[in-house]
Image 1 (cartoon, rainbow, N blue to C red):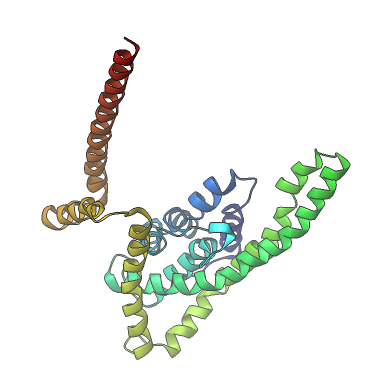
Image 2: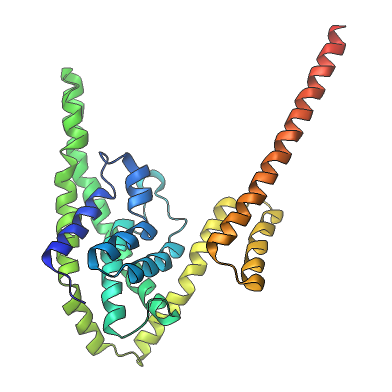
Length: 279
């Protein structure tokens, strides 16, 4: 698989759109378009291998399922993971002759994605540093009362930062990805210690993503029960994630109804007490 300049430019454009303030803010950009699950779909369409793109995106999404940017602090750049890591992982899987759905293929994809994601933090902070200059332009416009200029500061000037730190690096790295992967293939054969180490680490990284997610949402021991139930259903019944999500939605709706009834009874009891006090 070889990426053309046009395909590389499209990947660079989506890397920019993943965090552009003008594209619906971070909700639609960073937290939707920039996620590996969506990025895998986009990369699969651009590179002409939809199945491999989605499978690689799903594998990387598990690792970064709980990745957030509190206070602008990032441990990995999802733009780089989605639009540099996924294309390079797809090339590597094809080059090594692996199946994207196999355990080795997903482990290799995760290893490539995490390496690129860590390097992508440099691009993230580079974009943020350049954007500081546009903030000063915005403050001067506010002091002068030229509020219309703020639209330029928010919608136009950040494109310069993203072109320099997202579009150009993504386009070059994706275009040069095939020779780079071929070079890695020569010096790092499949049966070597290095590749076996990458496979092992890549297989363990999804556990880290799940653990981070649990740490954020589990507050007491009883909260583990729904997760154990889901894994039990998947293991015993062989259901897929879509079926497990439907079952989880049913339980969530039942739990919601029970809590609403409890609140209604509590509010009704408090009203009765107030009426008795008035009497």
